[in-house]
Amino acid sequence: MSKRIPYKNIKYYTFAENRDFILESGTAFGSITVAYETFGTLNEDKSNAILIFHALTGDSHVTSSYDDDNSTPGWWDSLVGRGKEVDTNKYFVICANLFGGCMGSSGPSSINPLTNKPYGSSFPFISVNDMVNVQKRLIDYLGIEQLQCVIGGSLGGMATISMMTNYPDIARSFIIIASAYKTSSQIMAFYEVGRNAILADPYYQNGDYYGKEYQPERGLGIARMVAHITYLSNKGMENKFGRMIQENVINEQLTYNRFGPMFAIESYLRHQSTKFIARFDANSYLYLTKAMDMYDLTQGGKKTLSSEFSKVNKKVLIISFTSDWHFTQADSWEMAKELASLGKDVSYINIESSYGHDSFLLPCKIQEGAIKNFLKNVGVYNETA
Image (cartoon, rainbow, N blue to C red; front, side, top):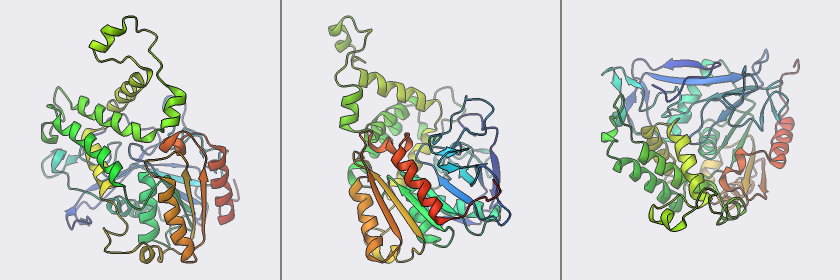
């Protein structure tokens, strides 16, 4: 069960029909379906493939370069596609909806084969490592022994870190963008407020709202508004909105009594909320944000960053943005510094931007150039393209 019609290019891979996929929690689970898209042509020796992990609310549609129309833009059209820096004329790009999502891959809205009903809140807790292990199965299924690169931002960056440390030989290089090896307590707090908004929605009904007349849209919308604030920056919001009053507000006192939206920023957040509830599932939001909160490469201090990064043996590029307070430049620098101290082949760039955490999703010549040159130096692509 998905929130919207699958993309024309979408494919599905199903495995673990005998419930033999073991989650990090120890729970046996299955079957698992992965919804994925591929862009470009895999070369003869299957050496030009790039795996891209999407962020929290993303999906498989990383580029619209192969669409018949512009009705479904790719979430990273500025970077990925024909003639772009991640050039699908050269590279074979793979992007899959994360396990636990709601865009075709198995998640809480999927049908439980044991009950023939959506899992809802009976879906097991999953981890970032579980998401990565599922995509490792997809790469094996595609017959690719080694990827050219694994790229991910935000939650996708966490997945890239997991892939880099759990499967260090799966790729010749890794790019981690606007991410961290653990979520800060401040961001965990924002996500907890969002989850509570969903859980408090009277239509949430303990997660079993599928097929019902009403959905927990208000709670999900508030969760999106809260999270979206963390994706922006104070400077960016001041530049774009300031204290601008909505043009259609005539009687300010009346508007205050009705609690807005009076200011442009209020209207913007409500607009983002409305768009989001039309495409995303509340249960998936709960599960994915919790997985982000729980991710910690050091397992709460049981391991060290040094011991985990000592497994890395390929080229790494880490990118951060100056105004990102969701995953800060300090988070990225800590990883880059540790890798460098271990003698690893790591490059780090901190990009000036006022767009906050969302910076990595927006057109950015510095980011695009850094990624293009990094991939070029790794040096494998489709020579016949």
